[in-house]
Image 1 (cartoon, rainbow, N blue to C red):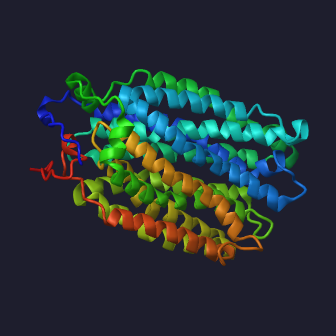
Image 2 (cartoon, rainbow, N blue to C red):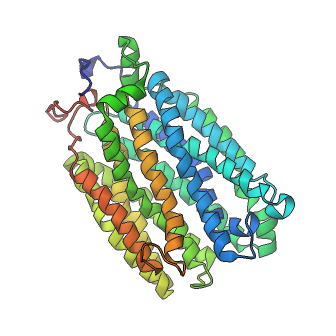
Image 3 (cartoon, one colour):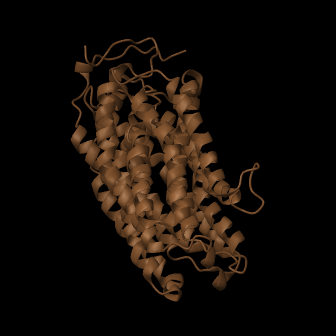
Length: 452
């Protein structure tokens, strides 16, 4: 059954500060996901030669890409823990904690000894640090999304929550830009000290993010729960009792993230492999260009979702993205650089942005304030875990043995399309929520509109 606590009227809520919340979410997400995404570039370009047995390049590459997915396996665990504390003690505390944890673990990756120095212990330590990154990321987006959604005014939740993902995109741009000069170094320098520089810079990231986030104010919706004494002591129990169907729906919808991981990690590795032989720096610029366009596209898609609804906008991305992945991978296979740039920008920068820009509001609006952070965190992180390991699955598909009868980049495209289809079905069968007032969200019987 749904949460039956009588809602407090909207005019009784403390005044929200959507601009300040959105800015804090944007900056914090950009800094944190800079840390998270530099690992992806390193896993695709460097770690197979530094932490794994380079005498077997194919196996080393597969192992390196698998470590990228390890963080996604850790994220559901972090989601349960950080989700509980976020709904129990507030969004702000989690936002500060996750940033510090990400900064420390990323800095330590830059300090790790290599396989040549300490043997098999090197990849073990690498995986441990990646797990800590995953635990941090598990609470970052859900807490930032909850913060912005609960500060946002009626009718503009889509726009303000899009700043979290916009910051994430900027973090990815920054991470890629940092790796472009690293990839241009002579290989000996790149594999000795060059790859460490982006990771060591994370100590600055952590300090800047801490200064920004420690001054955040808690959301009006959470303050209302505190004042009324209705903050649940066990939010996870409430979540699983009354909102488990929404959690399952978010898990399925979050599989759309496969598009991002295939594009940014697997396709980069495939394009620069000996088989295709494209230039590393050029392919990194493709990612930069696509994510730069996404900075503009995300808020525009979000504004559209505030006008026509979350579902139609998300479905544009969920249906269009697998089609564009086929086109992009075909462009890579043709080794046509102009075509690669055009299709890459359209795939990640425009079409995928339709889903990526509005999922913070779409998922967050499925839950009440009591369980919003944990519901989003658990649902998204399980889905993202599957998407993260899609990179290793794709590497298996293009191996000589193949995977489930599929081989080559066409098989990778079909694999991506299957996961996107699950995401599209989950959202197509969901309830539209863009016109429901914040204080009524997560209560299926409500029919009140924010525009009435």
